[in-house]
Image 1: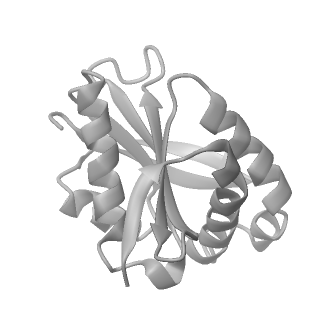
Image 2: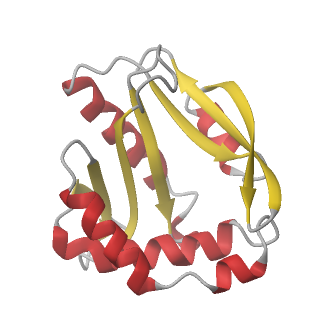
Length: 169
């Protein structure tokens, strides 16, 4: 299967929302309460992604298949002020439909985002991920090192949120 990665446009918000919701439902099943996953909607995520795409400073890329259907996305921005002062950028999201995982698409999207960070003179980056998420191994394989761990409340459940970092991208 062939795919390409391109900058997201506002017209991509619905496709991104579908990947986001469907990915959460497969990725976080058994990690988050099912009610949290059941309450995710395409319409709320689409509205959120419209804002994200239009927000100055946000970078959003989509992976599309040969039919130009969105199969994954990644986004990032400058790190929050004073959060991790030695890191410049933040990989805020990277999601693929479950059936598209393991094909190198996530790796290609991450590399594209990190390359964009470099063009913005960002030399380092973080990414946050739930400890029970299998993507921790993906970030480690991509050279990120665990730099922090914090509790995170989701629907009354305390989950462990890990922060990984690349000191040099």
